[in-house]
Image (cartoon, rainbow, N blue to C red; front, side, top):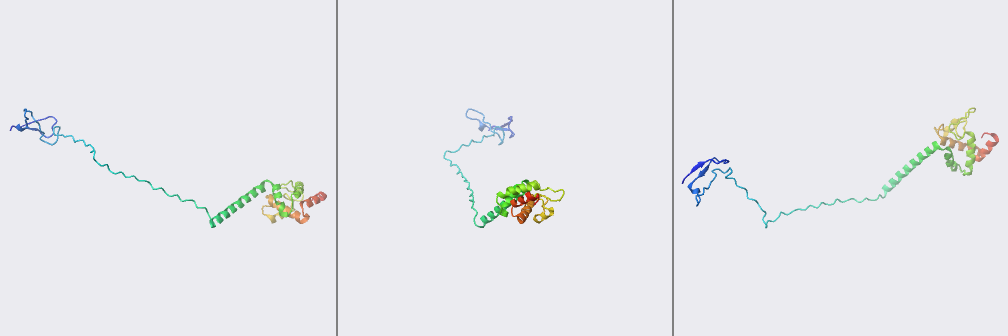
Length: 203
């Protein structure tokens, strides 16, 4: 057996052992790295291939569970009564605001709407319209410079109208309500008051 140690560039294990046993049948030198590392000792990992008989892993499919939607239930019983009461209150509030806007914008429309409260038909409105046109021009702030009569119906003194509202100085509705009551008590109807005015130039 012949052994020798030679250096091999790139070998990391230290040296190469040569023995007579490493000569092949044709005196071919067979080199063997003494260490397990280095270029000569490096081995490529075998490439793995899938076996044709391999059983694939079972896949699990997750199906989402649909969320149940609660159907809307129509309101019944007390809920319906409560809703109706609320809607009625809101309607009354809207009507009240509408009357307030009307009171500030059109005194004649207010008077026309009050005619039925005194049992007067629409034919009486023309007499009332003419009467108060002569008295104040339907101006809520009209003041007689000599007598001090005030407002649309020319109440004398104007403070009389306070019995129908603290806003008698500015609210046409309050003044008209007082004026209609005054006419009903003294002349029964607006046309009766207008007839008296034509004869006396006051009422």
